[in-house]
Amino acid sequence: MSMWGGRFEQATAGEFRAFNDSLKFDYVLAPFDIAASKAWVDALAREAMINAEEQATLQAGLDTLLARVEANPKAPLSSSEEDIHSWVETELQEIVGKVARKLHTGRSRNDLVATDLRLWALTQTHVIGEHLLAAMDSLLAFAEQYEHAVMPGYTHLQRAQPVLVSHWALAYVEMLERDLERLTQARERTAQAPLGCGALAGSGVAVDRHQIAQDLGLNGACRNSLDAVSDRDFVIELLSVASLSMVHLSRLSEDLVFYCSGEAGFFLLGDAISSGSSLMPQKKNPDVFELIRGKTGRVAGHLQAMLMTVKGLPLAYNKDMQEDKEGFFDGLAQWQQCLSIIAYALPHLRVDTQAAQAAAELGYSNATDLADYLVGKGVPFRDAHELSGKLVLAALRKGVPLEGLSLNDMREVHDAIAEDVYAALALDAGMSRRAALGGTAPAKVHSALRRARQRAQAHAAALTHVRQAKLTDVPKIADLIRYWAGKGEHLPRQEQDIMQAIHQFAVAEIDGEVVGCGALYVYGTGLAEIRSLGLQPGLQGKGMGAELVNFLLDQARNLGIARVIALTRAPAFFAKLGFAVADKSRWPEKVMKDCEFCPRKHACDETGLEIRL
Image 1: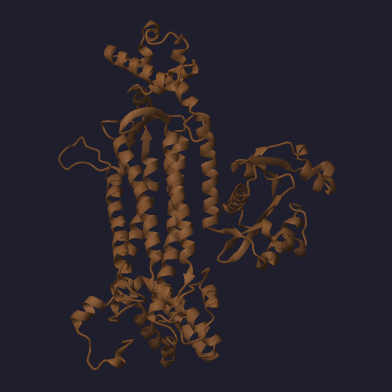
Image 2: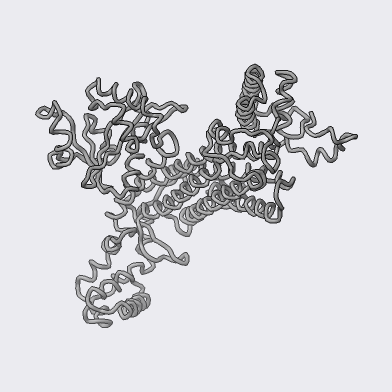
């Protein structure tokens, strides 16, 4: 069915159709076009552009069409329609008859495609967020497995100073975490609804665009109709995030290719992620990581293509913008695939701890430690640097490491050097001195690893089921607290009290239904407590409780709170999240506010735990 045939006396040429039509790739937007159409039907009904019977008929027809697409996502490809929008209208007319011809009242393919693409992007980026978290989790597990292993750190691809393998892995966790934060911010800007902006100047029907956005689960309505239908900065931004994240994956891959090579040899590839040579039987190739490096250029190329497509376009919509999809679809697909394979591959890597440590001990990587030692003896750093360099030269001439020089050899350079220099040159001593924030000292890395794990859990909570509570959640929160108070797990709370403290609460959802809650109560001294934590019966053990706690801990960090407590009969649950058993009698704020009036005051069976953030 042509959506614009009335103006034309002859059919368009087949050659033009082959060049112009987009159904062959935009068919993937079918579920989102149907979702936008359902929201539009309700908008038309609110403005009395269709009656209740027509509304029900159209909605039922769209539901039927959605079920067909869900059963066979490629169903539109059997059609000769121009694009996914005309396919939806044609199929809907087959299902419900001529009333389908009212669907397009007041809207344009311009605002419709912009809406569809945003809805598609939000769905895809949610999945990509989960893959980012999986890649971070894989790196964290690798860091935890090899927390104390030592390897050489490099500058200019030359051995520089020894670092912990866990410190190296955490560097990439930091990069991916920033990628996740950028993705989350980009999603917020993407979640705006163009629907109702018409072709360029706004809809001829006075629809409630804020309600349409709410019906679509979006944050709000685009503010300017020209901008809404003609810009694709959300595509560019998401491709930019994808490109930068791919660069991070490429750098990780380059490190792994080198560390697994015969030239380095302190990482070992598992057979499951290796390939061989058709000619050389001894080869074991890191193809998976080389492919990630290659695909990085592909994703970055899509970003450049999109920038060049948009850069010279006048307002408003132009057909050039049809080029926004194929590169976007492929770019996000490649990013997701590379994240997925990284998460799969890292558990198949092994560190040869002896070879890695031996490599860290080569190349006079303790020369900086020698300079630091001299500084400790009162030598100015620039002088210490020069003296350390002279001793490296002396060691090179003798073919020994720095610690292989005799004390007399060292004292010839500076008489402040004493027997304790050999302890200072030891590998462990040098790393332990790197104890400033962000350094590779084992104690600092251990703390950094624990905090990174907590942040990853908090990100998972924010990405999946947990959000800040709203006033509309109060009845369900009250029901949950009432249930667990009846079991003796919580103190009862009135709905009015919950409403006044709603800013303290977070909720967990499944399919839009609140199934869990928890609150962060801040005492006047700056201490905070996690309380009123509860899930719908039957949902325990699925990770939602941990997501709620980590969401609340993340809020505490944002507020600058240093210590969070919990009083519970499930101490093992909190211990897994980093809490330690504490003496609750040392919490005067809690004791004075709640414990003093508790009926179980003298027979308390709850354990006090706390965590320092």
